[in-house]
Amino acid sequence: MPYKLHGKLVAEVFASGRVPHPSGLVPMKAVHIGNLVVTSQAVVATDPIVISGFKQFTQPVPNGRHPVTVAIAEIDGYERIAFARVQFSMLPSVSWKMAVTDLEKDPDELGPGIFLGYGVDGATGCFTDPVASKLMGQRYKQEGPYFTFGDVIMDAMELTDQSTRGWCDVRLIEEREENIICFTSGCGDGFFPSFFAFDANCKVCQLVTDFLIFGEEGSSA
Image 1 (cartoon, rainbow, N blue to C red):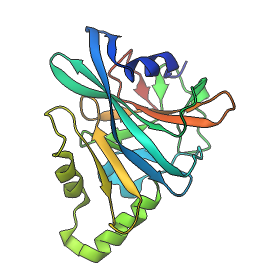
Image 2 (cartoon, helix red, strand yellow):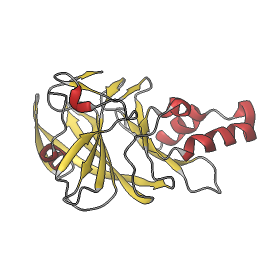
Image 3 (cartoon, rainbow, N blue to C red):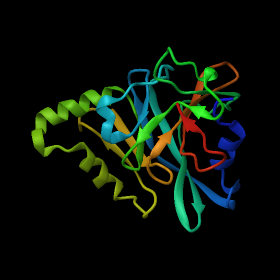
């Protein structure tokens, strides 16, 4: 069976209290870190430093301003972002499906513990709208070599940095509302899956990236 994300675990980690972890019961807290602006009915989860080479998820999502929350676990004295979530509605989830960027890939056909996802090489993941990539290119044209996207993100992340976790909400062009919301990826670099949740009417209600802090770690496809 492919790697799965279970709704019960998501509900537990985004609630206050302690959650079972291989190291024991760990304290959890949920922090709202911004509202993701979606204008193209699509969303991206990726390493923000390589956003120009992204692929958007095939699952359409509603336009609007959607709250982004991170679930932070305190493990061995360090705070780690275990999950990041976009909420498209507040309706409860009844089913989950692995997020994909290619219609030809069927997650149900993956082997035991295998998942699709994105690679991280700078200990940071993000959610954004595909339009943000075009805006990044536009800003580069305006500022030339003086614009370094990675530096913009790192400078913004420092405002919330606490050694092992941080986040930021960045607008790429001041006069445009599209943004990119970044966050530390669990314990650092790796390959991480995302999952869409659906309500009782089969409408998408959440997108969650799992940084593999809890449960048995799977393998990337």
